Amino acid sequence: MMGRSVSFVRRLGASVVDGIWRLGFATRFMVLLLVYSGQSFRRLHLTIREIYFSGVLSLLIIIVSGLFVGMVLGLQGYETLQRFGSGDALGVLVALSLTRELGPVVAGLLFASRAGSAVTAEIGLMKTTEQLKAMDMMAVSPIARVVAPRFWGGVISMPFLAAIFSTMGVVGGWLIGVVFIGVDAGAFWSQMQAAVDFRYDVLNGVIKSVVFGVAVSLIAVFEGYDCTPTAEGVSRAITRTVVSSALAILALDFVLTSFMFRG
Amino acid sequence: MSFDPTHDEPLVCLKDVHFAYGERSILKGIDLSVRRGQVVAIMGGSGSGKTTLLRLIGGQLRASQGEVRVAGSDLSRLGRNDLYALRRRMGMLFQFGALFTDMTVYDNVAFPLREHTDLPPEVVRDLVLMKLDAVGLRGAGALMPAELSGGMARRVALARAVALDPMLIMYDEPFAGLDPISLGVVGQLIRRLNDALGASSILVTHDVHESLEIVDYVYFVSDGRIVAAGSPDEIRASTDPFVHQFVHAEIDGPVPFHYPAEPIAQALLGGRG
Ligand SMILES: Nc1ncnc2c1ncn2[C@@H]1O[C@H](COP(=O)(O)OP(=O)(O)O)[C@@H](O)[C@H]1O
Ligand SMILES: [Mg+2]
Image (cartoon, rainbow over all chains, first blue to last red; front, side, top):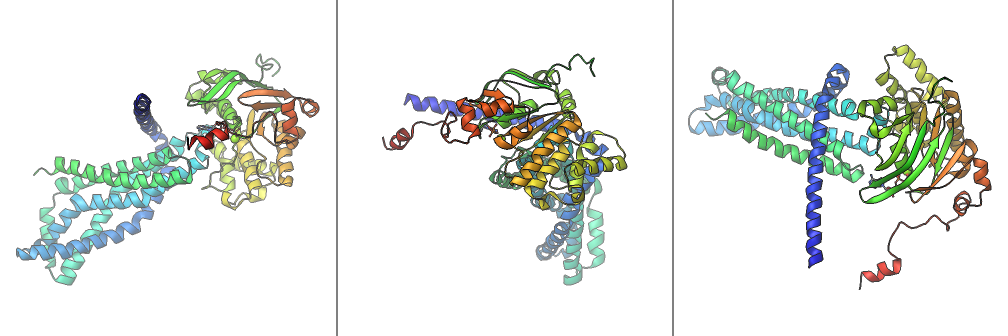
């Protein structure tokens, strides 16, 4: 009995110490990431390469998904609006849902599973094969050379991907609403133009996508850098990146929305 | 050079070094020194703490007790920048090469030059070709690491480790997994590079015969301590039971075959008791 409670207290203590240690590790990681960020802009080619890998290579999935989401919005939105006799407002509905919510959120989720997981895998494998240690032994900081460019590459790509997603979504909505269903094109565009406010809707959407970009990129590089250096450890880190990114995006979306759109 | 007051001091000097991973004590008082120009081997069974020892000398780990001095500086007193400055003059060959898999062989060898010097591309190119030529792989510059055999990868990693003409080169198991020919090639390379660069080398290995051919001094590590040391001739002639077991590859002897554990009878019965 005595022995069991001692070992319980000991395990509890160990997990608290472990948690504090990890918190310190993560904090130190973030501080170093910021300190070394200057280098990833001075040596811009490194960051541009990562923008290519996380941004440009995600374009296809973003464009295709945006188009489909917009088309679904067109179908569902028209069906609902029609009941209230306001099918002409379809453009407004499509544009507002995309710029305020679906653009940043869905693009963020896609970005996490397409680019975030790849970044985690890449950094994790470099750790597993001792490439990061080798770099450190060559007096080159892995955080400056490997982590920071990938972080900034993601942060820079994300708002553009969200904007492209929203644009494609509007095109999808137009395709279904105007071309197939026959909503009046003039009403579709002019109502959209009148109802969408640049600062209130578009800018807030961009702010959301920047925040999601920071969150996903930070999670992706940290999970890779922190992974257990084994095949299993890398695979668990990738899973954690996708799951934590999704949760972070949805939770942050709620918080941001509650501040931005209180009406 | 001859007026350098530190010149007589060993390049690497460990005094009573202790190290533990968590509660598990790995090194229990290591004394060791490497003089300039020497190639020194550290031998011991797997898990005896050889890689740990190299990490301590490279400053990737900190000794919990004792002193690690490299080129006159006590590593425990160095900040990050000073440590990086020191590491620019060290080369380390990792056990599995640790080549950057997203770069060609050429770019791997050019990496330290591009990171630490402002040399124009033509000069970098000449230096890289010289280093690759020294390891016999001048023609392999355009290959990716995945296209190399184990021995070739090891030689590329060697070329990368000496790209900045280091004063100290460390090798972690450079012979592991090599066929007898590559093994001889790598062994001779280690000696030739050391002498050509006027560097010192530390060689961690359990390949006794190959290393006795090329080194100046040998340390044997077991159970966290230096248990024997000497020149290759002294080692070959040694009657020390530990050295004898190692040199003649005997299974039983002072080096335990088992990882520390309770006696097996107790372990087997304990589950049912
Ligand atoms: N990161 C680590 N955490 C905990 N224990 C470790 C770690 N690395 C090595 N060890 C343990 O330290 C001992 C010495 O390891 P190492 O220096 O790699 O031995 P060697 O290179 O001589 O085979 C081994 O028993 C190993 O289990
Ligand atoms: Mg080892």
